[in-house]
Length: 194
Picture 1 (cartoon, helix red, strand yellow):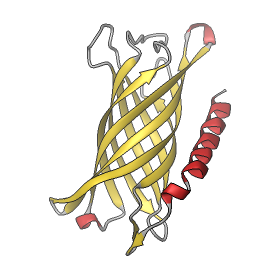
Picture 2: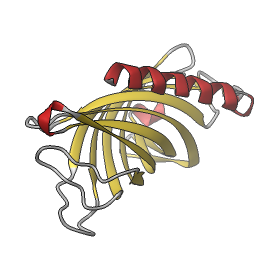
Picture 3: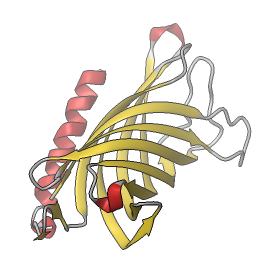
């Protein structure tokens, strides 16, 4: 089931890339791409040992705003729009699937005045589930959730068009309603910039 979902998400990412192709034409200046668009796939697993959940996602990123110099590095901002599928571990060895739609506003710090291939991300956003997430030891009380992200990654390729990033993700409703156990994931993301 997880493998089938991952293949579906990757295929969905490919479809998004084809549909957005003309709007994401390459515009270059120097060694780095200037286009604001990117497309990604990612997969992850909860940090909880007792009841594991897996997720796969496909999404689109869009860079916006000016660049700022800070502490010898460069800060940029981007929006992240995604569709995720969570496979939750449930009682009696069954699994439940949840679809999550969301958007996250991110700030990226790129080292060496923006010239380094290494970067760190921090973000916060809003998400919506198609049902109330539940595992053997956790139950969300709302379908609406906040999400916070911390990530570290590296750009590579002739024009830095590829990115690989390790991300820690926290999802909870911010105590809008109880119970609010939250869930934490570690994700690996691959992104391609057009």
